[in-house]
Image (tube, rainbow, N blue to C red; front, top):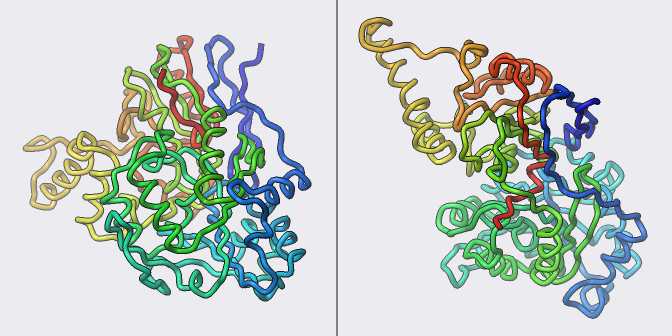
Length: 454
């Protein structure tokens, strides 16, 4: 009997199907969002025109109004290319002309999208037809005041130039907001000072946690200050298809969506079984390394001794995020890099890997040789069969990547073992474990799920 799992890879860049073949004698348990059918265009329209918290969309959309649509960027799975044609058609029918509509991509502190990515995210026809702006967190922002909790709010100046602001995004588990979506979309069009304030001074909660937390309540106040009145929030399935839409008031529609997301995305914690191998397939947050961390939770939450694997295509390579710089990004100061390695990977990894390796390098430059005062560290992956441990926090975390050569070279600088395919890793782990049958927890689309604590 075949022991295989079909998954998706390369969100936005092909959404390819990949089959992973496990040895027949292995016990593989799959934890995944349930199958749900995709919405048809007519259903998308009906849900947008039936807003939560408003008697009618006509209350907001009046002829002659200037409308700004904020949408998330290509690091997020939201099918904006399907939502926007319907939404724009609805606005046009209500007397909003094409020249009165602008689209602002909420880049936040992420890398800015190029023209090809904009066409993928919005749809080429819309990208060519409408005024599209990419938010920059360090330029073109205006100060609009402070929240009651003292957060300074700087937002993109285009928000002040429009009469109606509509947000289009997705509801997914998120740390520290509990769930992304709703008012959190406003952070993507805020200035760097506001974004840093939220991430450094606002107490949040874990992935899938209670949305009545300081982070989310404060960002809701900031969104209302900025004029974000109406949202179109989606849920997607493991194939990145739109399965539900919650439109309406930025808070009420979001809360309704979270109630559904809790039923949809919750899965057992990996410690619920005695597993030899825990695998996190991070699709659809697999465009770059910078956002794979949204699907790390299964391999980070497991407390028992076991092997760990992360599957991510990363066609964009390392990627970038100013709030959480990648440790091996050569663009940032060495001290800043060390600081972010500490907060990203934890004190144990920082002391034994990051700091220790730099001390060894410094001592070598001072003339200390192997066999005298220190032991040289091995290149990650050089002892694949000899050890079940690797140069990563928490154990054998590895990445399957389909990046192009330049992106792949950048990934090689990260402190992780990289394998070119899941099959290559499974061959390795079979040798390491002595070819014995393994008990496996496979978290499909782990970035869409959160751990249920019962």
